[in-house]
Image (cartoon, rainbow, N blue to C red):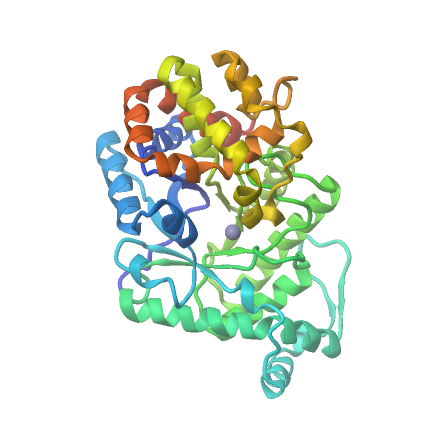
Length: 420
Ligand SMILES: [Zn+2]
């Protein structure tokens, strides 16, 4: 078997609604490299986004390859089939070499009783007192608890195994990076649950390199983390310890690391995450997506003229359709309609006012997280504008690209991977 593709310690998932910013995104990784830190870019776009935009996964690959050529990028890079399942994976097989296998929908689908019993019997090490380096308090567990947790997750992991083997047949062993995601669900997974999930994943022989649990707190799209920071830091630390333990105990890939979804703009947790990563000498995959589309809008507004006009027009439309735009994202946004400025007010805004309201600078009193979240889900409106929107992106390339690069590098890569 040739050497399997192996994701490096630090990687960043960059999303691009309209496949126009790969170059500007890659520049942020070049800046990191110049600062002495390797951050691998992974272009991710979910089936859901492709469907809304009307794009094909091959366009993500083409944009990534072009950017890599233009900038002479010599390091690794990947294209992620984000949140796929057996029904949606096919059109991603050819262009992608990273697969986020989403089995969150199968959590709580009870597994067969004899499979649960077999799992509990196979894993006596999971019952009783569990101690592992880096975790202060011992895990207290019992056969009954392991059985209960296995009942919740074994079906989901079994499905992940089926999807993995399907991709493996099509692409070949070691030819892609498998991630398993369980983040799009209502309740977070505890570190003990994560350990049991990893034991089950090892039983399924999925050589996962990244795993995306649901963490405690709210990971709203495009805005900062909301929740108990201390609880998050403890959970993140225990999760990293659990991964290190599972790699050893179950022979999972040595580079296995956490993947943090909706990871863009979570400024409050980057420092605590960094502290944990340094303590364990661990890596992480930070998945960002919609933040780039908002930087496009900021760039257009900043450029003024026709750019500012279209940004206002997108706001006006998003405001008019706010309920239908927000509905599918109810669990990952918090928009208070009472705090949205009226389109009439926005029409009178200068470039600076528009940019101040939208740019994620919590220190700016003009910043409005409601405007930001509404526009975050408003990319459908730009998608409908089609060529008119894309032409403006080309005309105002310099301002747009500067904002995209700066945002990824200064506000994401630097605090998490390099240190402020
Ligand atoms: Zn996700």
